[in-house]
Image (cartoon, rainbow over all chains, first blue to last red; front, side, top):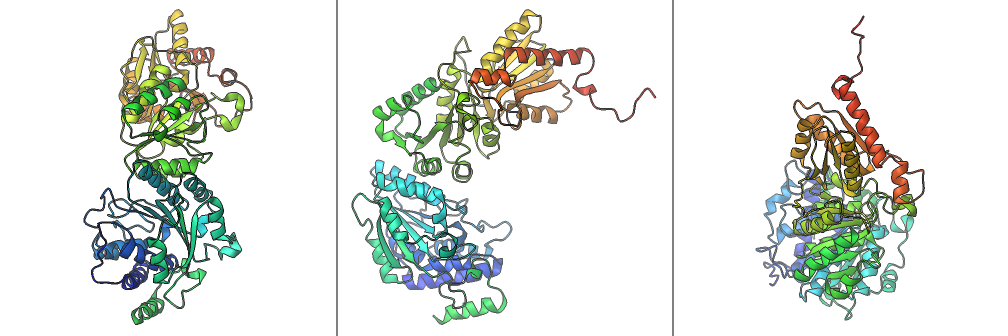
Length: 275
Length: 326
């Protein structure tokens, strides 16, 4: 099942995701806009070009599986799913509202296209690994992709499947680390330094590429060329910028928490409109 | 019970290739045959219970029937949030199997005492909780949880327990099994203390106390009908479990009795205090130290029946705020 974009480019899709995220978090007075903006380009490439999914048939058995393990960036996932037709765009207006289907962390319940509810970090990669193992044993051709945050690489439960997947040669599994270098209470360097992150994954047996997570050519090439090695899972360490696309949010810890209100909202939207 | 479990599972798995057994690197001498005969239905997750549980969910959401397997608290408490969010919230077809319920690994120390597991598992939405009382029940329970489409917790004892049931049973999840009839007192037991309950009942019969014994192998969903029948047909109820007195069988039965209309039956929970065992030793030794013996059950039953005879049953034991004689 192909992924025909309705005449919009991956760049345009990323742009729309950003605008939705700013509007959604503004309306909801919600946190995590910075985390959403850092993965907008990755999600646009995945849903715009790479993933074999079908909005008409979300449970299509041969679909690629996608997991957003950093569930707090759910606004970006909801936005791309709505843009790709999994559910009406109007649903985005209900984000965070009483009675809404779209909660503040990724929720699968009655939301077409969502594979797994996440929000507690360190849960996505174990489940993704189990799906990859099941697919491999059953000789199925679909692939499994999982986006993790860098802060999530503090979790022991992230490193358990990082150990497991290469041992079982799960080449149908791709982990993408959104390495925006800012976590909850400070920079990654200050909290628990992950450097050298790519080498850590390599040492565990993954085939690793490092990319600029905002360069569409690099993102698409990296995603389309998986698996990089026969019999190894792939890891993409995507160097990203928290808050990417809104000048005053970029690389600012504050925007892990603050909702874009008042003039902040207007300025952010105006900046995005200009692009 | 452990042997009954693995034999039943192997038999099922040979007929249904969707069944996958995932171990957290435990089960030496238990899972070997399964591993050798059905390698494509076996996974060793390594010493990594969080990943074991998450992977089970990933495989279950791909159509498999997954069993996670480890001992004591490792498959439950160690990875609890993965069970809550991933298994239960997604209603994944995952069965959590713990070998060594209660003090089965007594001598191994407090880390290996599974004494709060049922309380915690019972609190999780959608989780079926089963603690078979003997190998025969374990065999049936294994089949029943595999057939049940959704999350289950199966708490197994150890190897070598005798069959308490002397005849074939009709096992259904959520339906208590009656081993003896009697109208003086009902002993409700869950898990490996079933034999203690039956032996206590036999000795009570010798002194003229007719005792009904129920094996409450399924703690959730609970057989409330059987509990209410016991409350109306016998004069007192005692619960017996190798588990904390908080949140397990005793609590579950108390919840039913407390909310039932017009039920005032003398009631006592026999279980473990909410504290770590100060004693080290075998399962038998630890049971004795904690009053989980026939003698201790006899004593509790005798005291309870005495209180009903003297009019000091539960209904009359409320502390009086004023002395009616003055």
